[in-house]
Image 1 (tube, rainbow, N blue to C red):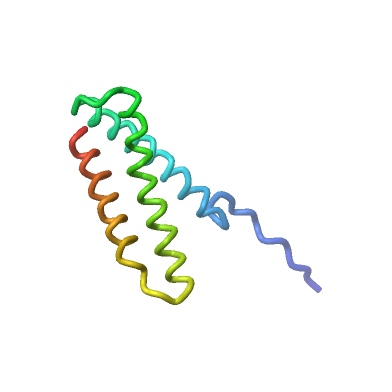
Image 2 (tube, helix red, strand yellow):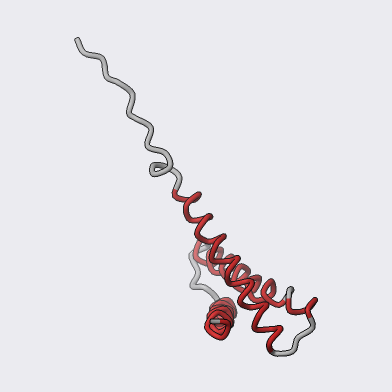
Length: 101
């Protein structure tokens, strides 16, 4: 009789896609934050405000995402306000990244 051997560990590839996604999202978020700060400073914004503007842009994206996921989980179409907020947040984020390049 043969006994089966345990499967080899394949970390980080097996079972940890969230770690990989979090690393990529963290890097992208870091770069995006600094691009938005640079654009705000170039536009003449005060330094203290230039450093919080990216948080409001990304905050809109996070809130809109949460609302749309919640709507879908409850079997509803995502509400228009969440879609519009998400779209405007994407436009603002991409626009700042392009302007800073």
